[in-house]
Structures are given as structure tokens and as C-alpha cells.
Image (tube, one colour):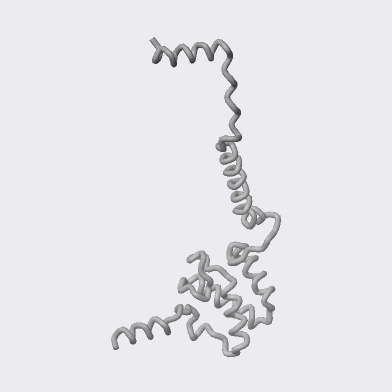
Length: 155
């Protein structure tokens, strides 16, 4: 019985939402918009956690700011633009693709391509058929080799 209760507790235990009841908006539609925006914004303290899931005081301030902007009549893009203007692109969990962020977006793929090319070149050079064949022995070297083999080794 004890194991069944523990299993049920694990099944029904979800992530703890950090949005407190007093922060929620009265209108469910506006609250849903605030929650969706909260999932797009990074907690600057926790770094890779959305502000809706963070208990940090700065995340609570950002949640409050999002709800204030929504109540002021701003659209979703205006709210994100306002917060991005104040805190920079780092506050977005998915930064925009622009010329100054190309390295962020495409850098890992470039590194992977260079590593694959380097591995290809390395493995290509290691293959036996890629090595140059040994030059054939001259007549003088063949006589010397035969003499060494007949005598039983060098003297």
C-alpha cells in the first residue's frame, strides 16, 4: 500500500509553478497570454529557466512587468520588445536570428563541419592505400640483401 501511495504521489507531482496567486490576472485569457509570454522569457538569475518557473525575486519582477504591460493594452510582440529593450536579447529563451547572432546559431554547426572534415582528412591519410608505395630495390641492394640472408645476418 505504501508503494502505491508513493507511485501516485510521483505521478501527480508536476513541476511547481512559481507564479503566485496574488500575481495572477483576474481575466483567464489575459493570464494565459501572460503565462505564454512567461515561458518565452529567461530568468536572469536562473539563466535557463523561464520566469514562470523561477522563484527568484527578479523573475517575480519580470512576471509583474509582463502583466502590467498586458493590462496596459500591449500586444505580445510589444511586451517582448519592451522587456528586450530593457534587458537585452539575453532575456529571450530563443534569441532572434540576426547578423550579430549568426555565431550563436550557426557556430556549433560550423565547428561540427570542421571537425568532420578534419576527421575525414586524418582517416584518409591513415589508410594504407593512401601511403606511397616503397621504391623497388636497386640491383646493388638486392645483392646485399641476398648476401645478408645467405650468411645468416650482419657481421
